[in-house]
Length: 87
Image (cartoon, rainbow, N blue to C red; front, top):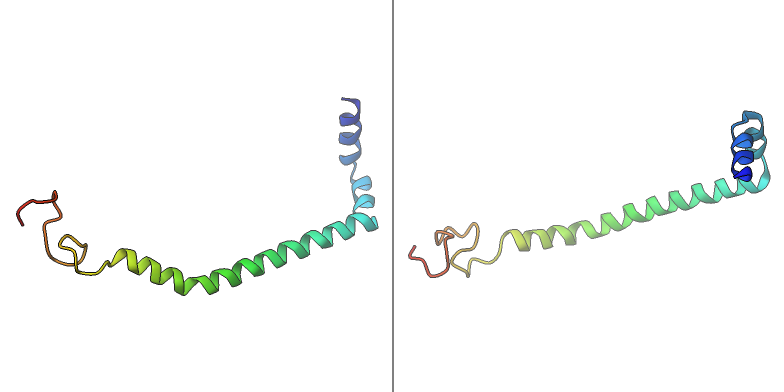
C-alpha cells in the first residue's frame, strides 16, 4: 500500500515524468513499441489485401449456390416452404 502511494505521488509529478521519458531505456522501449505497432498494421493491411479476392469468391459461392436445387435463393423455383410442399 505504501509502495502504491509512493508510485502515485511520483507519477503525478510532471517534472519526474518528463525526466523519466527522456531516459534512454524508456525511449528505447517507446521506439520498439512504435515499430512493432507499425509493422503489425502494415502486415494486417497486406494480409487483408491478399485475402480480399478469395473472400469475395467464398461469399459469392454461399450467396449464389448453383441452380441445381429447387429452393435455391435466386433460382426462381419453389416457394421456399417446407420440404415436400407443392409448388
